Image (cartoon, rainbow, N blue to C red; front, side):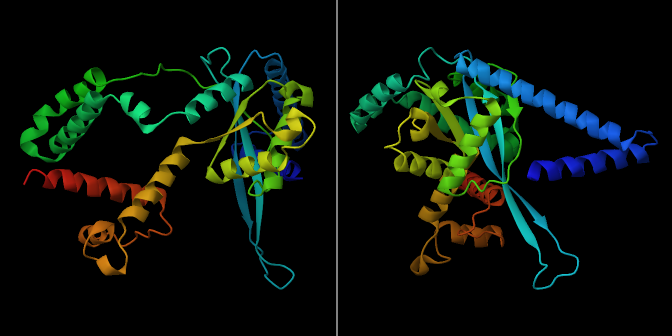
Length: 320
């Protein structure tokens, strides 16, 4: 239903825009052209699904919630503001995927080996010299940024990051992605996550048997990851691989991972009542005059800027 509503709204918007530009186009022509574009997208998705079926390409499924607030002109008990919730999905094609990386059996072996790792094994893999160099270069970059007499060394610091300390550089590439039709599914529930995965499967034209011996990373926020994990736990006794959703590999996106780390920083460094305004990030908030810092809400951009500013102030204070 949401697709139909969107199509109607798009028709009216494009028709009015063309009219204002002085371009005379019939409403039926705009409507027909939009349907042709929709049919072309569906054919592209079916073609992508066929490539997934033949194991010619590896993809990531990404989805997140979308919301739209409908404001009632004359509010009453029966007519009030409504918030409609749906889901938007995108298919991202991965490149340079090693052979066997999407094989469930190989993944199970790697997970089994990882379960035997201890802290000593991880410590041996750390490049302490590289970590030391990153720390030194970070300090130098902050000092060169704020101290006038050290500004001349800024190009040397950037060169150290770009050349001396570079590690596993990624090549430039052009992302290949396929937006899918939106839906009115609430993906915040376990049943909603199941409905979203089935909806994506349907749009790609895949069948249940196509998911045997297949792994598909499903990316989103931490709520998405949690719901997919619960879905897999609830369906462990189902008959087919597809219905057990063992093929779905939950994967938290980088931005959401950074947000979770930011909340962890505030939980660890925001003092309780005994240390209030004396130490930690709360004292730094008062010193810097940031009145909009709320550790419980933790808006990403304002709070990350605050943490970076606090860190830079500590680095500058180290020169005293």
